[in-house]
Image 1 (cartoon, rainbow, N blue to C red):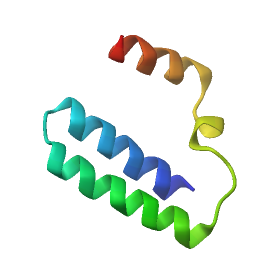
Image 2: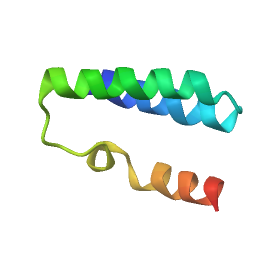
Image 3: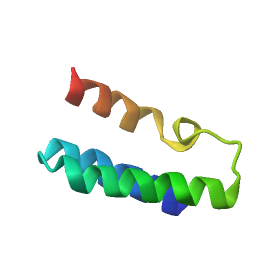
Image 4: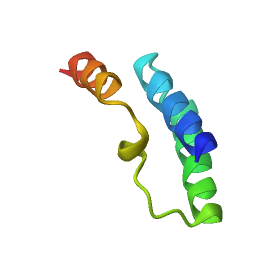
Length: 60
């Protein structure tokens, strides 16, 4: 699960830096990792509330 979160975070940071292609690569890697683990938990459930708030402020 930690690897999935790391790849998702890298994808988000890549988008914010304007590198859409690299973001798609990280997104695909995260989805592959998700399929391997067959996890039923949401990434949202593992992100602390204060980090969610900061991310919402960042994109608003």
